[in-house]
Image (cartoon, rainbow, N blue to C red; front, side):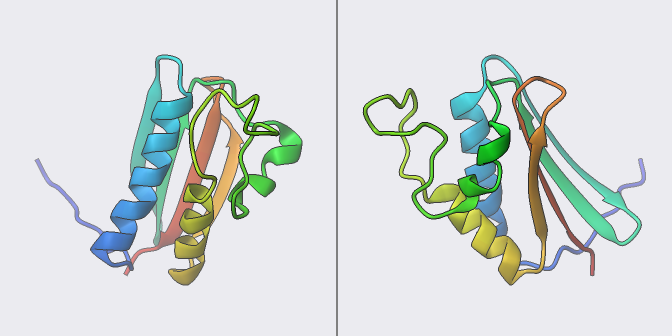
Length: 120
């Protein structure tokens, strides 16, 4: 088996932090399925994390990356625990390393987070 090891521009701690935040969100909001993929296309790596949860409303897809933002409106009616800083930190780390991060609707029914960055 021929295995290729692309060099991703990051430090280990930051890359782990990005992955752990996306994975823990997927675990928190999924019903039964999570799909994680890391692939290379040309000179880019693409990391996707998706789940089969309820998804993110269209008008909330940009605001979820803001500090203290959560998808439910108030602490009184939230179903899931959280501080609202995880995706904000992920966004800051992605900006620092010049990665792009987007969120879309998943084919599984929930959210699909996509991170793309240059391979060294």
